[in-house]
Structures are given as C-alpha cells and as structure tokens.
Image (cartoon, rainbow, N blue to C red; front, top):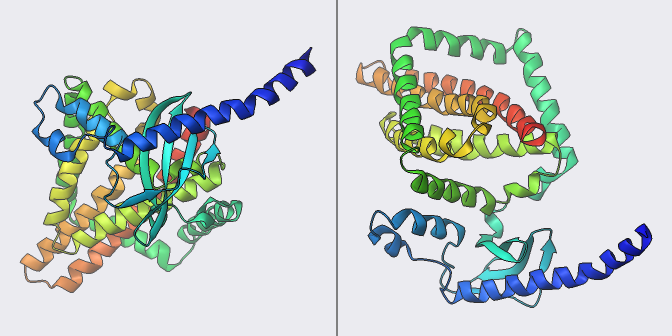
Length: 335
C-alpha cells in the first residue's frame, strides 16, 4: 500500500508544480499591469486608517520598475518560490513569486547585483567563517594588535562613559518606545515588519536558511557588517557623528515597532540576545562618531577622533560576530 501511495504522489508532483507555475505566471502578468501594487503616492496620501494596509501591500508587491521585461516561458520552481528571468535595460535579474499553496504571497524583482554572492552560500564559506571566528578569538587571548585594540576600545568607553551612557539610553530608549507603541498600532507595525522582511528576501537571505549554521552565520555577519556597520554606520559617522545619530534615532524607533513583542510574542525573548548584540554594535559606531565630534569641537584634531571612531567600529564588529553565531543557532534550532 505504501508503494502505491508513493507512485500516486510522484504522479501528482508535476501537476502540483504546473499549478504553481500557472498561479505565478498570472500573478506576474497582473503585477506588470499594476493590478497588485499600490503606488507610493497612494500610500503617502492614504487616510490613517488605510495607510498601514496599503504600506504592507506595497512591501509585499513593490511596483515593477519601468521598462522591466520578464520571460514568463522559463520558470524555475524551488519549493514555494517560482522564478522568472527578467531584465531592466542591460541589468539582468529575476522576478520572484512567493506562494503559499497556490495563493500568491509576494512578488518582487531582484537584480542580479543585489543578490548575495554565490560563494557565501557554499560550505567552504561557512567553514571559512568558523575559522575566522576561532582565529579572531585566539588573537584576543594572546598578546596581539587585536587584543590591544580591544583594550583601547574598552578604555575609550570608560573615558567617555557619560557620552556612551547617553547613546545607549537614547537609542535603546527609542527602540523600547517603538516596541511599546506597536501594541496600540499593530497594523502599522505589521506593515513595517513586512517592509523589512521584503528587503531581506530581495537580497536572497532565504537561500542561506537551509545551508546550515556555519553558512547562515557567515551570511548574517557579512550583511550586518557591510550594510549596517560600515555603509550605514561608519560612513555617515565620518561626518562628525550627528548624521548617524539622527539616522539611528529613526531606525531604532522603526525597528522597535517592527520587532515588538506585540508581533513576535514569546519569540521575542528568544530573539532578544540577537537584538541586544546587534543594536549595541550600531550604538558603538554611533558613539564613536560622537567622540569624533567632541574631539574636533574641542580642537584636539579630527585625526585623534577618527582613531577613536575606528576603535569603536572594531568593537562593534566583535559584537556583530557574536550576534551572527547566536542568531544562526537561534534560527536553526530555536525558531
């Protein structure tokens, strides 16, 4: 009897896949005609009671770029995702349709340049990240520049303890405020959560989910370090700190709304170590930018302040390393 059910299942799989493809193809056709996506103007002009719903739909079905062409005759089915080759001028990519059964949950365009580099998803990259982490830990336990920089960074926190405390209270406080307000604005919080989830999915982060803890930890660290700590952390901090403080003030408040216990429930407690470690990393580089401002304002020189900023950046990278390992373990075994 078991063999008979197996034969029947194998016979049904092509039909199920074909149903997915047809549902995805119809969704892309409607998406290209503008039937699924509200415009950004419509979201901004919507009345308060309608805005969260439109924002969530905008996050799930971002409007297709003008001039996008899609090859609907060459689908690739991978689980609940159907991918169609696409091009925007000379830039190639793919349109991804996320399905729940045959219900279309998300449609978006992913340029090839936005996707994670393929080498990051290989076992070799995962083992390489493990070796990097162990080597970094080894150097912290031995007399080395890495250990010396850690000591200097901790001394900097003590020397500017008032400024460090202010940065923590201000940014963690805004996160807590956003998390508290989510209880009264759950629709807006869910819309922002969908917006962040869509951004992470657009880079292909879901591809790392089934690759094991080592690969997932490496991908998480690479993304948080390059996009969070460096590009939107160190770079604006070089402009005397204040631009980064304002950027993170808005970012932490929105993060609080999207990652509130009001939405995550008991999962919030499991995710709390990740939040504390990652947010602390970005607080550290913000603090470093403010030290740069203080030293420059007192006439001590931009160069001295820049060194302090780089020390804070280094300590932030260490926090991100710890956060990546915990989050990969959390996602793989706890959630």
